Length: 64
Image 1 (cartoon, rainbow, N blue to C red):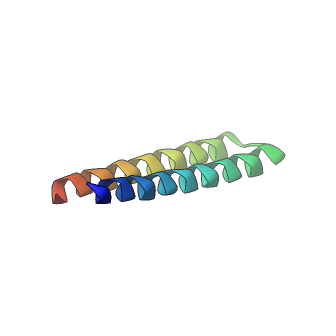
Image 2: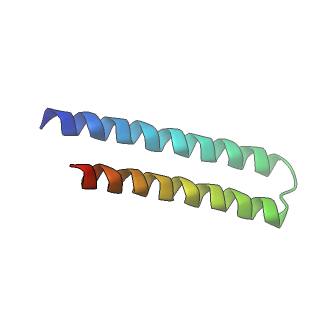
């Protein structure tokens, strides 16, 4: 049972690092004129991060 809390901590660290990356991107984009295509790219990055995360979770569960 102790290992599951450790995994959860890793998970949280991963999520916060992704969020930090997204925020950095948003700051960078908001400083200059945002082209619609760049905004779409940013949204795609966010989605990719979410898919990556959900895939990781799925593979963890199936490997157990």
